[in-house]
Length: 333
Image (cartoon, rainbow, N blue to C red; front, side):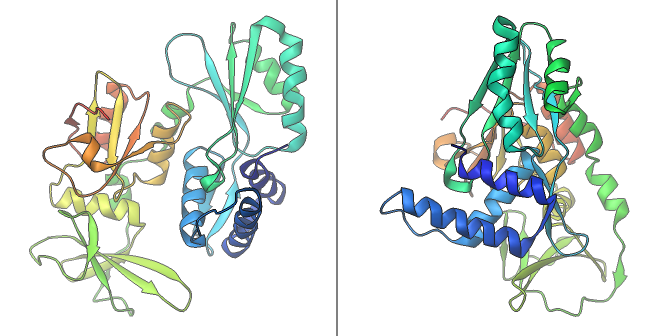
């Protein structure tokens, strides 16, 4: 029996793209189905589940979030990627998938006997994430044959490295912005405070670059604008936060070299292309660690997203792309 997360991915894969309102409708049905199975389930806000599910599926490489013509969820091409870890070669299947492909996995493993192990790991159903399909092989060449059986491309270069190389940097995003004189027609509601890492009613006007958020209550959408020297431009909120942090010289990324852990405040998620690259180092979602458990003396504003299996060179490259200095820390929790 396929999980609700698997069934959600099957629908996205079959349709190839889902407008946001249809994606919301499908998720509402998933929540209703879960409530049938779990008695006394606490009420869940659709908006919270919708955002967390879409964001997690995007970071794991199953789909993309397209804002070009109204928000849509688009299925990513299926691919087998290598995980950048030491030891026995491990691979993971990401992107779109079908029930037929999933039913083939047991027979494929049987064909290769002791040379291939396939693990189908159920994920947390709270936000409806598809099962993780992980392959462990004695010889990397076997993966080509597995890909042919499933009709899936094999990418020999680790997906995390390739994704980080393609992701671009903060400076690239900065140069792509198109500035306009004056103020946007909509009135701003909140400004991003680089000390609190959250949106507040007002901030110190001495900040050279200010990120503002406006909520369209009619369409239930949020718009983000960057202001600088009498000009403004529309921005992606994730890139916008790091532009404001860079302008204010605020450093917020932490790395534990002994445990290969990389920590990001939950209020400042990584820009999506970089977030996917970091997530695909382990192929698993980050742990959400309460701030009081990390005991970081210079920061305690919110919980942290802690990513596993991150090498020092990879973490340094992420920090460089985001114009951050990596803070050394002992991440024990």
